[in-house]
Amino acid sequence: MKKHESAPRMTQATAALIAAGLTIMLAAGCQSAKFGRYSGAGRAKLLEEGSLDYNKFIRWQEWERASDFVRPAEQSTFKEKLEDLEEIFRITEFQIQDTHVAPEGRTAKVKVVYRYYRLPSITERKMVVTQKWVWSDEGNHWVIDKPLAFLSLNAANHAARSAVTAQGK
Image (cartoon, rainbow, N blue to C red):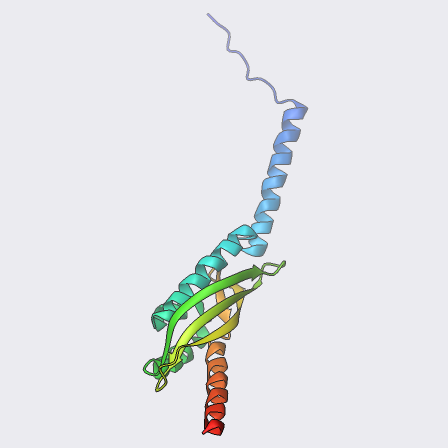
Protein backbone atom coordinates (compact mmCIF):
# COMPACT_ATOMS: atom_id res chain seq x y z
CA MET A 1 0.00 0.00 0.00
CA LYS A 2 1.06 3.50 -0.78
CA LYS A 3 1.44 5.98 1.97
CA HIS A 4 -0.57 9.16 1.59
CA GLU A 5 1.70 11.91 0.50
CA SER A 6 1.26 15.17 2.29
CA ALA A 7 0.39 18.29 0.31
CA PRO A 8 3.36 20.50 -0.50
CA ARG A 9 3.91 23.24 2.02
CA MET A 10 3.50 26.86 1.01
CA THR A 11 6.81 28.62 0.77
CA GLN A 12 7.36 32.10 2.10
CA ALA A 13 7.79 33.37 -1.47
CA THR A 14 4.41 31.93 -2.51
CA ALA A 15 2.74 33.43 0.56
CA ALA A 16 4.30 36.82 -0.22
CA LEU A 17 3.02 36.67 -3.82
CA ILE A 18 -0.49 35.82 -2.67
CA ALA A 19 -0.42 38.64 -0.10
CA ALA A 20 0.77 41.11 -2.75
CA GLY A 21 -1.99 40.00 -5.13
CA LEU A 22 -4.65 40.42 -2.46
CA THR A 23 -3.30 43.88 -1.60
CA ILE A 24 -3.54 44.95 -5.25
CA MET A 25 -7.09 43.59 -5.54
CA LEU A 26 -8.09 45.40 -2.34
CA ALA A 27 -6.59 48.68 -3.58
CA ALA A 28 -8.44 48.32 -6.89
CA GLY A 29 -11.66 47.68 -4.98
CA CYS A 30 -11.17 50.83 -2.91
CA GLN A 31 -10.52 52.85 -6.06
CA SER A 32 -13.66 51.40 -7.61
CA ALA A 33 -15.68 52.28 -4.52
CA LYS A 34 -14.31 55.83 -4.63
CA PHE A 35 -15.16 56.46 -8.29
CA GLY A 36 -17.96 53.98 -8.87
CA ARG A 37 -17.73 51.19 -11.37
CA TYR A 38 -16.24 53.38 -14.08
CA SER A 39 -13.16 55.54 -14.08
CA GLY A 40 -10.71 57.00 -16.56
CA ALA A 41 -11.28 55.77 -20.10
CA GLY A 42 -14.53 54.09 -19.06
CA ARG A 43 -16.05 57.40 -18.00
CA ALA A 44 -14.79 59.14 -21.15
CA LYS A 45 -16.46 56.44 -23.28
CA LEU A 46 -19.69 56.77 -21.29
CA LEU A 47 -19.58 60.55 -21.82
CA GLU A 48 -19.21 60.14 -25.58
CA GLU A 49 -22.08 57.64 -25.73
CA GLY A 50 -24.32 59.56 -23.33
CA SER A 51 -23.84 62.96 -24.95
CA LEU A 52 -24.47 61.45 -28.38
CA ASP A 53 -27.69 59.78 -27.19
CA TYR A 54 -28.88 62.90 -25.35
CA ASN A 55 -28.34 65.13 -28.37
CA LYS A 56 -30.02 62.61 -30.69
CA PHE A 57 -33.05 62.59 -28.42
CA ILE A 58 -33.11 66.41 -28.35
CA ARG A 59 -32.74 66.47 -32.15
CA TRP A 60 -35.70 64.12 -32.64
CA GLN A 61 -37.80 65.70 -29.84
CA GLU A 62 -37.79 62.57 -27.71
CA TRP A 63 -38.07 64.52 -24.48
CA GLU A 64 -38.81 61.52 -22.26
CA ARG A 65 -35.68 59.71 -23.40
CA ALA A 66 -33.57 62.89 -23.24
CA SER A 67 -34.73 63.42 -19.66
CA ASP A 68 -32.87 60.24 -18.65
CA PHE A 69 -29.72 62.40 -18.84
CA VAL A 70 -31.19 65.11 -16.58
CA ARG A 71 -31.16 65.10 -12.77
CA PRO A 72 -34.42 63.60 -11.47
CA ALA A 73 -35.39 66.84 -9.67
CA GLU A 74 -35.21 68.77 -12.98
CA GLN A 75 -36.87 66.26 -15.31
CA SER A 76 -40.47 67.50 -15.21
CA THR A 77 -39.51 71.16 -15.81
CA PHE A 78 -37.17 70.06 -18.59
CA LYS A 79 -39.91 68.11 -20.40
CA GLU A 80 -42.55 70.83 -19.92
CA LYS A 81 -40.38 73.60 -21.37
CA LEU A 82 -39.37 71.52 -24.37
CA GLU A 83 -42.95 70.41 -25.03
CA ASP A 84 -44.00 74.09 -25.03
CA LEU A 85 -41.43 74.83 -27.74
CA GLU A 86 -41.77 71.76 -29.94
CA GLU A 87 -44.12 73.42 -32.44
CA ILE A 88 -41.88 76.44 -33.08
CA PHE A 89 -38.32 75.27 -32.42
CA ARG A 90 -36.63 72.52 -34.44
CA ILE A 91 -33.08 71.25 -34.40
CA THR A 92 -32.29 70.03 -37.89
CA GLU A 93 -28.79 68.75 -37.26
CA PHE A 94 -26.14 68.53 -34.57
CA GLN A 95 -22.48 67.68 -34.43
CA ILE A 96 -20.45 66.91 -31.34
CA GLN A 97 -17.10 68.59 -31.88
CA ASP A 98 -15.30 67.81 -28.65
CA THR A 99 -15.68 65.95 -25.36
CA HIS A 100 -13.39 66.49 -22.40
CA VAL A 101 -13.50 64.86 -18.97
CA ALA A 102 -11.77 66.88 -16.24
CA PRO A 103 -8.81 65.17 -14.53
CA GLU A 104 -10.81 64.50 -11.35
CA GLY A 105 -13.30 62.49 -13.45
CA ARG A 106 -16.43 64.09 -12.03
CA THR A 107 -17.11 66.92 -14.49
CA ALA A 108 -16.91 67.20 -18.25
CA LYS A 109 -17.57 69.54 -21.17
CA VAL A 110 -19.06 68.68 -24.53
CA LYS A 111 -18.97 71.15 -27.43
CA VAL A 112 -21.98 70.78 -29.74
CA VAL A 113 -22.91 72.64 -32.91
CA TYR A 114 -26.66 72.75 -33.55
CA ARG A 115 -28.40 73.78 -36.74
CA TYR A 116 -31.95 74.88 -36.04
CA TYR A 117 -34.83 77.07 -37.06
CA ARG A 118 -37.47 78.84 -35.02
CA LEU A 119 -40.84 79.53 -36.59
CA PRO A 120 -42.16 81.70 -38.11
CA SER A 121 -38.72 82.04 -39.67
CA ILE A 122 -37.62 79.25 -41.99
CA THR A 123 -34.00 80.36 -41.97
CA GLU A 124 -31.69 77.72 -40.59
CA ARG A 125 -29.27 79.07 -38.02
CA LYS A 126 -26.20 77.75 -36.25
CA MET A 127 -25.65 77.70 -32.50
CA VAL A 128 -22.50 76.50 -30.69
CA VAL A 129 -23.11 75.24 -27.17
CA THR A 130 -20.72 74.00 -24.52
CA GLN A 131 -22.63 71.53 -22.39
CA LYS A 132 -21.49 70.89 -18.83
CA TRP A 133 -21.88 67.32 -17.58
CA VAL A 134 -21.46 65.89 -14.08
CA TRP A 135 -20.93 62.31 -12.94
CA SER A 136 -23.84 60.79 -11.03
CA ASP A 137 -22.74 58.21 -8.47
CA GLU A 138 -26.34 57.05 -7.98
CA GLY A 139 -26.69 55.82 -11.54
CA ASN A 140 -23.04 55.48 -12.54
CA HIS A 141 -23.66 57.71 -15.54
CA TRP A 142 -23.26 61.28 -16.75
CA VAL A 143 -26.04 63.87 -16.38
CA ILE A 144 -26.17 67.22 -18.09
CA ASP A 145 -25.91 70.28 -15.86
CA LYS A 146 -28.37 73.06 -16.81
CA PRO A 147 -29.98 71.10 -19.66
CA LEU A 148 -32.07 74.06 -20.82
CA ALA A 149 -29.12 76.44 -21.20
CA PHE A 150 -29.18 76.06 -24.98
CA LEU A 151 -32.74 77.41 -25.01
CA SER A 152 -31.72 80.66 -23.30
CA LEU A 153 -28.82 81.00 -25.73
CA ASN A 154 -31.25 80.41 -28.59
CA ALA A 155 -33.70 82.99 -27.20
CA ALA A 156 -30.91 85.57 -26.85
CA ASN A 157 -29.73 84.93 -30.42
CA HIS A 158 -33.31 85.13 -31.70
CA ALA A 159 -33.98 88.42 -29.86
CA ALA A 160 -30.74 89.95 -31.13
CA ARG A 161 -31.53 88.97 -34.72
CA SER A 162 -35.09 90.28 -34.39
CA ALA A 163 -33.78 93.63 -33.08
CA VAL A 164 -31.34 93.91 -35.99
CA THR A 165 -34.11 93.05 -38.46
CA ALA A 166 -36.46 95.65 -36.89
CA GLN A 167 -33.77 98.35 -37.08
CA GLY A 168 -33.13 97.58 -40.73
CA LYS A 169 -36.77 98.18 -41.73
